[in-house]
Each structure stands twice: as structure tokens, then as C-alpha cells.
Image: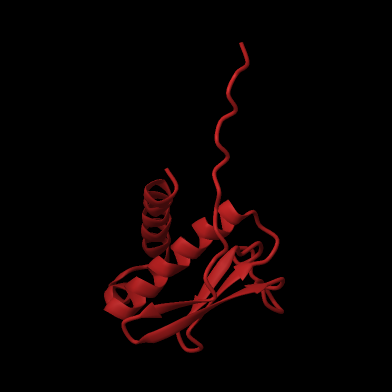
Length: 111
């Protein structure tokens, strides 16, 4: 009897733009997210959301699964920022919320 192979999860390419309540947000891939003088906590940044430029940057050399998880994490930063909720959160709490929601979105979108 031949064993069936498990279906490989397919992660589609990330969109290059998403719509948000206050206008479109570009999604770009970058090789350098750490900046010129990274702090230890910034080193190895996987993604970032810039509310002034309205851009989500994703580190280029990641698997699609990692890129989607990072994109969802940055989407949550966007939602928290545009709703004003981020005004009442400290950095660590905001990061924990983004991690939790992005993990839930991954489980929902890619079961």
C-alpha cells in the first residue's frame, strides 16, 4: 500500500497594497529593516509599519509562511494605530497583541 503524501500548504504571494480606513497602505520587501544604527531590540527586525509613509516593509529573505505571519503582525499594528488604541498601549503589550492576533489569523487563513 502506498502512503498518501500530505498536501503541502500553499501560501500565496503577499499583496502589494491593502486598503485601510484612512487610505491605501503599500507593502514592500526590503533587505535592510534594521536601519543605520540598530539597537539590540531592532536587530533582526522581520517587518515594520510606518504610519507616516503608509508602508509596511517585510524582510525579503523569508519563506512565504514567515512573510504572511509578519504581514499579519504589521496589519495589527496598522489597525491599532488607525483606531487610536495604540495610544494607550506600551510597546511590549502592543507587540504581544500583534503576535497573538497574527498567530490567530494564520490559523484561520491557513488551517
